[in-house]
Length: 69
Image 1 (cartoon, rainbow, N blue to C red):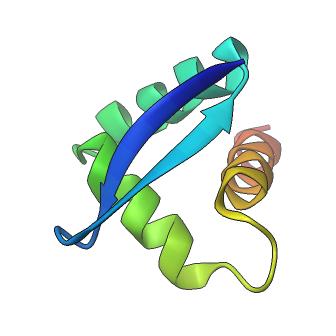
Image 2: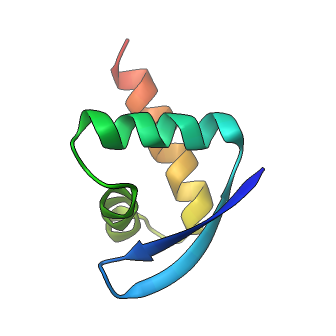
C-alpha cells in the first residue's frame, strides 16, 4: 500500500492510499489519456458519490479495465 499526495483542481491537497498494482494502473490510464495524475484524480473526485477518494479510484480503475475487454 502506498500513500500518495495529490492536488485536486489545482487547489486542494490530499493523500490517497492505493496498492502498488492500482497505482500502476492509475498512472497508465493517466498517460493513455495524456493527463497528469492530479488531473485524472480531479476528474474521479468530481464524479464520485459518497465513497472515499481511494475507494472511488479503485472503482474507476475496475470500470476502465472492464470496458477494455
